[in-house]
Length: 358
Image (cartoon, rainbow, N blue to C red; front, top):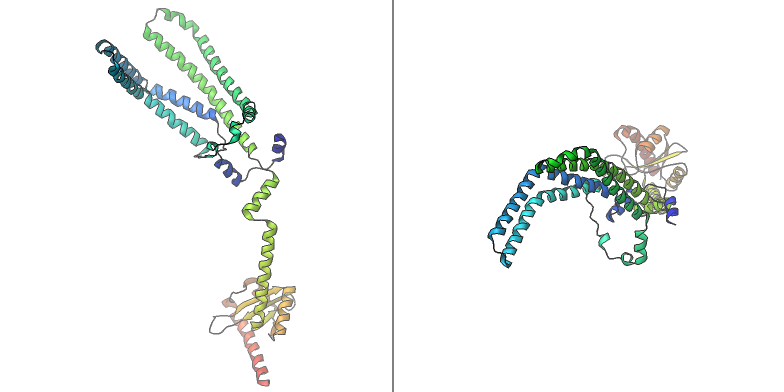
């Protein structure tokens, strides 16, 4: 079933899905990268501080050898010597441990940034379920981790064997060498083993990081249905949004039609366009477009205008310009003042004649 679900999940994860996975602590992290960087940091720090470490260990040994001859062993002196030993060990190992700790933090940060998730700390019954535990032990992930551990052991063993085998011709002459020469030679061989091992481990870490990235992307893939559901949650249901827009358009159209009886004139195309203008002298600097439309809406505007004795004036160029450039609720631009003023003057003359005749 799990394999089938992965086959269905063909779509790349959305940013929201990635953020949710991150909050749960699910990120593409390679332990091998952190391990090899920590190992290199520890070795480099030890190499850089080897003189300091050597003198510190030598000083500690000299101190305790002197104390062994001069100090009477009892409960008080044992406590004091133990505290001194802890202080010496702290001074010796402190710089190395600090460097290793900082690199462990940095290696994790470089891979995934700062991730703080408490979900893994929450108590879950599945964690104490024996069956769930067995499934984790015998899962593909556990097998992969076992394989990587065995591979690392094999690599370290092979590198040690290969290096020591190459150094065998130089071992016999050391039988008569001084202790300092022997220690120096052993240090050199150890360094070669470590260096060769680290080079191979770096390659393995890079491969493991690439695998972890691929595995992470595979796990967070989504089905097309999941993407649709997420879109509904974030953007809203498209059908509902379409219905809302339709209702809003209908309400706006009704408000527009309600403003037509108040218009001073309706300029027409004559058949395809209709633009209703209203001029409120003293309240506005220019006439305002209170309604406009094309096709059936234009016919409706003209019908309402005739029912309410609003004059219809045919001016095809002006109607087209007003329809294309001026939105409902906006005043006409200055370049149309002259043309509209002439039409309004004509309309007012007609109204005055009708009033005089009445």
